[in-house]
Image (cartoon, rainbow, N blue to C red):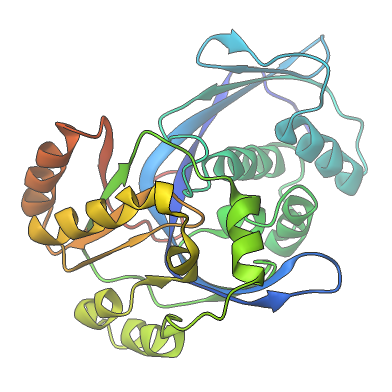
Length: 295
């Protein structure tokens, strides 16, 4: 198969967790999850070209520090092993727009986009399930980020069931100027009796009949129940989104990004403008159906 004679680009859309529940800690050290995940149009761009040199990765013009294999390199090596091919030299560039360490799967989305691009170019017969398996070896969010759309994610996040697409709506995504260490939240979940679990069955039923109000009413994330006091600004943003017209709002993943669902884009853009005066990393996005229009 001919390699990259020219640069090839692929969008890497972020995700939000419409619902996130943690069922318990597993014997392998991971947690048993149950989530409804949704791809959104906020995205990075991944560019690849074949070179005579070893694998390299740049992000926004800067080299990634040497001395450790990046997730992108690990995924590329696993891809070519699975494809039974020798890995060529690859120069990968990331144009970042999705905030890092934000609960929106930005890093996982970049790796997933790279895997889809490599598959399409070097091994188009490779099944989606195999690409998801390769992704799982790198990170738990990878299988969903490879698949995209709207899905129920169980297990570590790798057991995926496609769901009917989210009805037309607009998201406002707002990341405050701090990060939340994911291991800290998982540790707090392990020692907590969770009482505010999301109604995931009700959400999937609402999706089945195209009931946006029913989906919005059931947004939920158990991590919110165990947030340390220093991260309570998450709840301030949630309340502000509702005041600005959101049908509902919730934290995505392990945060700190909060998203609100709006019925129309005009209303969402007004809300985003109001939030951006205080929170620079505020974005407007649409739900994405299986990467339609982004490939």
